[in-house]
Each structure stands twice: as C-alpha cells, then as structure tokens.
Image (cartoon, rainbow, N blue to C red; front, side, top):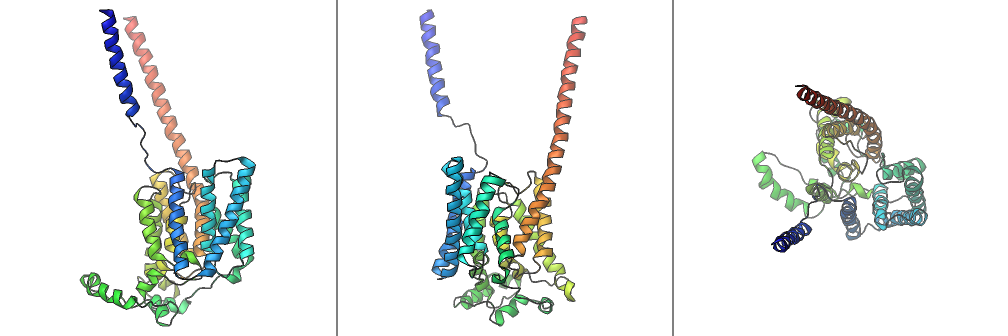
Length: 376
C-alpha cells in the first residue's frame, strides 16, 4: 500500500516537473539593449544605403570613416577590458551617428581621430558604460564644430524671410531645395484626394523636401525614411515615445505661434514644415533625444524633459535650417536630465521611507495585538 502511494506521488511529481520545465515565466516588457542596438544598426544602415542610391559618395566616405574610428575604439576597449562582443554594438552605432551628423565636406582624417578618441575615452576612462548621462556622438560633433565650423553649412533663412508666411515655399521656388520629377504627380494626387477634404493645397516641392532635402549633413536628408524608422523603433517599446512626442509637439507649437512674431511678423504664422524637415529635427527625435541613460525614469519626468527639450530646440535651433542647433539642444537637454533625475531619486527615497515606516508600524501593531491576546 505504501509502495503504491509512493509510486503515485512520484508520477505526479514527474508530471509537474515536465510541465514546469515547459513554462516560460519571464516576460520581456521591452527588447534587450542588444536587440535594440541591432535594430538601430539596421535602420541607420538604411540611411547609409540611401547615400549609395543617391550617389552621395562624399557622405558615404564620411560615415565609413567614422564607423572605422568607432570599430578601432571598440577593438582597443575589448583588448583592455575583455568586454563581451555584444558591448561593441553601441559603440559602432555611435560611430555611424557621428558620421551622419557631420557635413560631407569635413576632412576624413579629422573625422577618424575625433570619433576614435571621443568614443574610446568615453568608453574606457569616463563613463565605462553605454548608460552615460550624455549622448557621446553629440559631444563628438560639437568637438568637430569647434575644430572646423567653416565646414558646416550656414542658415538658409534670414530674419526678413521669417516674416513671410511660408519661408519653405520661398526656398523651394528659388532653387535652394531640389524638386524631383515625381513631385508634381504625387502633389497633384494628394491635393485631389487627401487635402481636398481639408480644403488646402500644397505647392510642388514639399514632397521632395520630405523625401530628400539634399543637405550636406546626411542625417538631415531622408525625413520620410526617418519617420518610418521611428515607427519601427516605437512600435515594440524599444524606446518610449513620450519624450520625442512632447519634444516635437512643443517645438512646432512654439515655432508656429512665436517664430515670425520675434522678427516683426504676425503671431500664429510660423512655418512648421520648415522646422520639421530641416535641422535634423526628425532624426534627433528618433535617434538622439533619448539614448540609453539620458532620459528620466518616471512618466512625469519624461513629459517634463520632452517639453523642456522642445523649448530648448526653439531657443537654440530657431525655425529651421540650423546646422548644429539640434546637437546643442540634445547636449543641454542631457544636463537638464541630471536635475530631473536628482528630483526623481529624491522623491523615490521619500516614498520608500513612507512605505518602510508604514510596514514598521504594521509590525508594531501586530506585536501589540499578540501581546493583548496573550494578556487576556
């Protein structure tokens, strides 16, 4: 009888063991950093592919050079610290970002040196982690700006142009932005279908501006591709969309309401498309504004951070066509993030103390209740 019971319980135990080993109790709220880095690498590679398709060989050489500088920094870091191979992904991505944010006329040797030194120092001496409080590619681009600001393009709009209703239309008409052959057909189709219900018409040139604005800074060019990339990144929580959403929203609202008024124009007449499609606004919102470790933790912290970043973009970048404004915006926003994170940690400590005090009081109440019961 005892032997039968033992065999019965053993069978139950074996069945339970088989079921438990088949379970997958861990749920990934968001992809791992390694998977995110691979996704970023693929999406940024599409930007590089567009440089090949558009025969932008100077820009392509620049990105390859910065990538080689990052690869050398990663290899040297591996030899020193013996880090796992997957830790090289963030450095390689940062190398591509540096190349995309520099003008195609920048000297290649200088690009290699800046990329190598910046990434190597940040990875081995300063931060020693991808979760740095500052976006390292931004630092590299600012260093490049101080060394050779003459290689960067100038603003395409003047103060007088900002008083116009649509400065972007003026830039398109005077040939500053190229118009592709397919622009007229797509514009006519959109005006006769989508925009007809909104009772608006868009002039020729805006479709080309969305597709490729022909900036000498590669990251500013392919806005449509950048928007597609943002959908891919935010669709599976690789990055939280809160910060870029508030960043872009606040920025374009300020541009729309106050940009022309600051130069003698009327209120609520700013050119939103010019602000969105130049200066690398969309690229910044997708790839730069929330690199690992550079954003707050809480929802309210992210909202405040995004709003402040949008205000900084308006004050620093202005109304569009800025060559370096968004890079400085990200750097100053990273500094603001430190202040927000300080208050977040302080608030967390206060909440933790409240919880601990509450638990201590509950334990005291239980002991008193037990003593009272024993006394009775």
